[in-house]
Amino acid sequence: MQILIRPIITEKSLIGVRDGRYVFEVAKKANQPQIAQEIKKIYKVDVVKVNIINVKGEKKLIRQKYTAKIKGIKKAIVTLKKGQKIPGFEEK
Image (cartoon, rainbow, N blue to C red; front, side, top):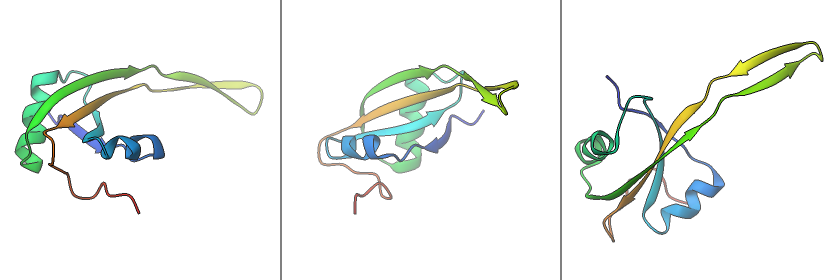
């Protein structure tokens, strides 16, 4: 099972990078210890804390007549040990 799906890079998530918090989309069945272990294995950093947020799917109106359901996602906010960074998340 693939634990990490993709990093989430938005303005709000990049503000957290200053404090060592990184946001990832993760698999629906992933739990906190699995996410921490996967981050440690891939990026070779020490994980202090993992918070999980389930984002609900929503209905979207298409052409004022039909509705479509957008799938929800599961996000993980990973806090790293002070002074450690993950490359590719730098602000410009």
